[in-house]
Length: 228
Image 1 (tube, one colour):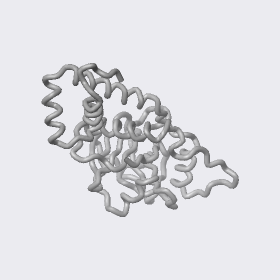
Image 2 (tube, rainbow, N blue to C red):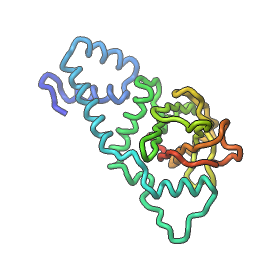
Image 3 (cartoon, helix red, strand yellow):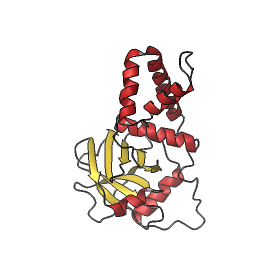
Image 4 (cartoon, rainbow, N blue to C red):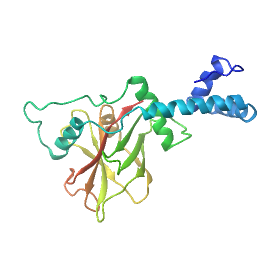
């Protein structure tokens, strides 16, 4: 990012905090008042936005094959085959902890550009072929905000969201997707704990969802949950 001659390090950092939504409401109001009058400050904000966007482009969105095997096994109650490689950890395709944290923040702002409270967990759930992309963010109050960014259910079928908690014997349903692309689901506290180190997956199910309490159709997309 190019430092502007008229702005010191504090202003550069302040612009970054504004883009990352780390400022209080009072600080945002003061900063936006400056933005209206200072073109150079607006340029700093643009540079931060472009920098974070390029960072997000470096992160591979498609989970490794080992994660898909784990999800399929959990969905159908199968044990890992003897000697089967567990592959990379769930975080293995990220470029580092800092990149993951910044991209996690950037993903949430695609969901809510001006959140009153930052989420505690979130995930970008994408199919390998890009045919389905869903963003999910869990608020501190336990409300899961879900946005279906692209794709949808197959004709005569439904999408169901599942949480696979770390070490859990089976996935737990978080509900069937409604027709709306943007919806919120209140979650009990017992389920929220499973988001740390867990995985979110979307399966293809009959209308109304799985009749068995476990995924019965194909796993269409999955992603590890990022803890912020």
